[in-house]
Image (cartoon, rainbow over the protein chains, first blue to last red):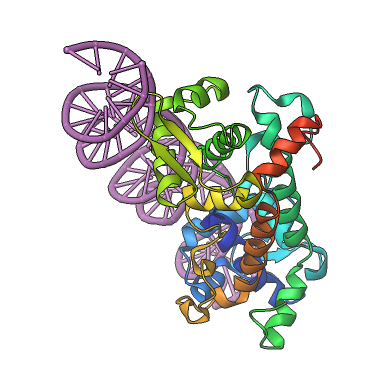
Length: 144
Length: 144
DNA sequence: ACAAATCCGACAGGTTTACTCGGAAATAAC
DNA sequence: GTTATTTCCGAGTAAACCTGTCGGATTTGT
């Protein structure tokens, strides 16, 4: 039950873009340095986020990335799902297609995993990038 | 964000033991056949569950495993944690030791992961093996 | 003695993770 | 128009992890 570095790096990178929102594109080099992340790796992640529509890129000198929407309109869940795919603790609850039980037993536990899935999604969808920026301003890094 | 087969098999195996609770030890062969799981692999998992104190083993002929406590006293979370370790989406929120942030950025997102962790644990700790048995009786495999 | 079970450590094949690398393409600044 | 900057893209890769398998030792009821 771990979130991979994709999701983690993605969220912190998007947080940096959110801090810079409305000030033109920010080059990845800046983000990578500030967050101490490999720039080449981050590049891959930004590709996913761009294709998912959360960031826009500007190529060439003075280019970089910027959010396509206000920080308040992008949730942590959006970012994680764009990078890691659907958030679900097991395959068979990725969607709510009930017919998918190929093991006789899976039905017994399926309700558990569906609840876990919903609970995780509820949390990550309740936090926007703007919330993270506000937390920073208030020096509130633990409770949100 | 996936639960491994350890956790999944563990829960279904414990569910079988719960159904059989109070009727003496149940050999793994039975559990493995009923749930269509590799017996040798299940053996490893039962070792962890035994060392964690949730099952007791009886060796030799007519032996097997049985729960050490009533099904209502063992939660799905107990089983998963025994098999997979602490449930936490990232390393730095395994416990609440705030000092552990070695990256400058991690504090910004740490609150998120702590919330996710708590939310998952709340769900899995609210479901006991007895609940699963009751769901089965009521034919209720989705909502619980 | 024999059969049924658990117990234990080693190993292994496949997948995933977390990157790195090389180079192409676009664009602003000079 | 050259150069520096920056995104874009696909390939490759070492290490870790997952999901088991296997062989054999040990325990115990019949």
